[in-house]
Length: 121
Image 1 (cartoon, one colour):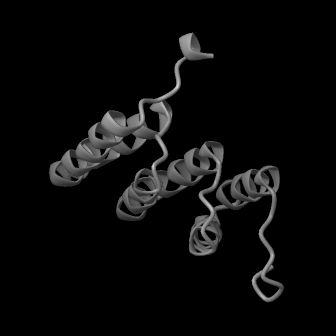
Image 2: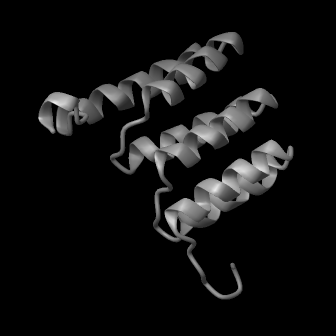
Image 3: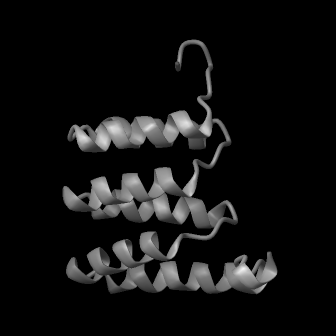
């Protein structure tokens, strides 16, 4: 994939992320994430949720925080599930400063681009 400069479709990314995390290869999921972000792509929210779950369940809270931060920096909102997961793990790790930073980024994003609600559809 890397040698051919290939970028997989969204569904493929989600399936790969699920496969990597289910088989305790969260390192490969993180590598895929970094590859896609480096190419200028921001993977689907489901891929992020799978990766965050895999990272947090294995104690890689710093990496999960960085992935969440990258999504927000790209102007995308975190899902409620993704935010609650990272919020809970940051609090468990005593990383209140990182949680505060995440909340500030979310608030800033909301002022510029409010999340889509069902009423808007």
